Length: 79
Image (cartoon, rainbow, N blue to C red; front, top):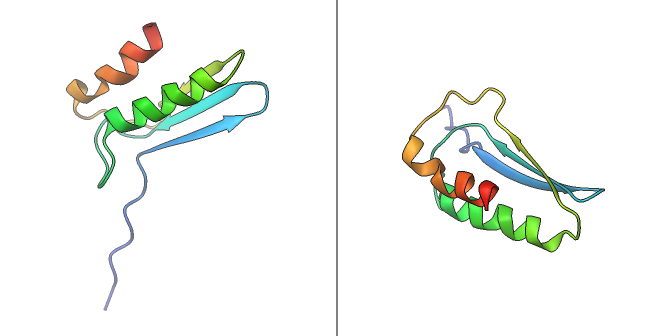
């Protein structure tokens, strides 16, 4: 039989040289075991550790989702 593929992460975080914090959000939603609000806390925690941070929020290919869940991402970016 066919096994179901594992859930692909809908958001991911990567810190790159030069203080670049790259957040990939492919869907506005929650993953199994991790909410978008949890990811936002992790994201801005990473930004806060950089002495001269540059934040890249990559939404390419994002079809949208539950817009009520994006609030922590937006609030963190404007604070």
